[in-house]
Image 1 (tube, one colour):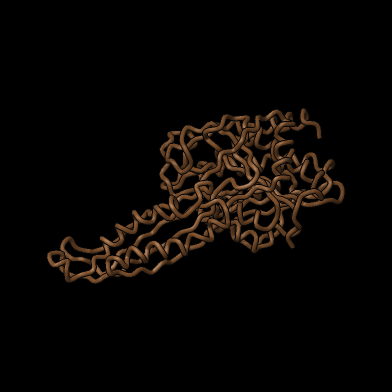
Image 2 (cartoon, helix red, strand yellow):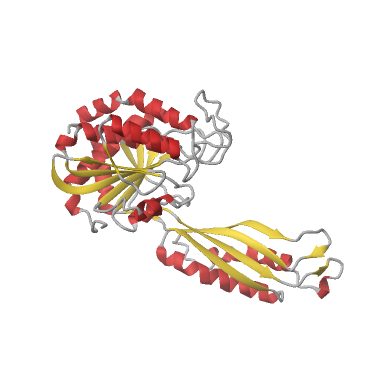
Length: 394
C-alpha cells in the first residue's frame, strides 16, 4: 500500500472515528462490564465485513482480517474500559453515566484501532497473512489481558502492537523505546501485631502504631539503600489503618502499598527485602509483622525488532518519532509480551490533564495518524514476520 493512498483513506475516516469515539465517551463502562461497548465494536466491525471470531468472554471482541495470501499472524490491541471517576470536562459529549468516565483515553484507543481495522480490511488484497484484532476489557483492573490469553486470543500470533495516548506529546508524534517502557505493578500488606492497652499506660502495651510508623519510614531504604541507583524502582505506602478509639492502643496496624520496578531481577528482590526491613524494625519495638505480597502485572518490555517496525511505519507516514520516557504506571499489555514479541508506544494527543484526572481530555486530531500508523505497522509486520524473534503462541 502506498503511504499517500493510506493517508488519504485514513483522512476519509476522520468524521466516523470522531463520532464513534464520542459515542463511547458518552457511555463509558467499567472493567469487565463493557457489554454495550462490546456490542458497538462488533457492529462497527460487521459493517465493514470484518470477521468477528468466537470469544469465550462476556465482554471484549476478537476479530481477524485475512490477507490475500499465506503468511504470519500479527495482532493489534486496544483496551475498552473506563474508570469510576465523575467527569468534569464540560464537553458536549461528556459522560452521561454518573461516576463513570473515559479518563484514561481508552475510547481513543478503541476508535483508532477500529480505524486501523477498516483500513486493513480495505487493503486486505495486499496483505500476506492475517491481522488479529483484540479489543480487550478490564485493563484498569489488570485482569483483561490474562482473560484474553486464557480464551486463546493470541493462538497462532507472532507479534503484537499496542499504544497508550500521551497527553504531553503533540499530535503527530509518537514515543518509542526498546526494552522496559512501563513498570511492573505489585502490592503488599504488612500487618504489625503488638499488644493493646490503655493510652495512658503505654508501658503495659506494645504499640503497633509506633512500630508501623517507623516501618513506613524505614521501607524507603528498601529502594535508596538496597537497590542499585541504576535501577529504577518506586515504593509507596498508601494506606495505614489502626485503632478504633482516641484513648485505646490497638493490637495491630495494617499498611498497604505498591512497588513498581522495571527489571525482573529487581522485582524478585523486593518481597524478602521488605520482610527483612519490616521485621527488624518491628522487633525493635517488641512487635512482629506478617507480610503478604500480591504479584501483579510484569513490566512492559518492548522487543527491539518490533520497535524497528513501528519506527519504520511511523516515519513512512510522516510522524515524528521521539525517545519515549518510561512510566512507573502499569499496563497489562505486558502479559502478551511474556508470550510473544511486542511493541507498546506513546501516541501524542496533546491533552490538558494527565491520565485518571476528572478533566482529562485529548485532541481528536490524533485519531487519523493513530489509525494510519497501526495499519501501516501491521502491513510491515506481516512482510517481516518471519524475522521477529520468538514463536507463535498455540
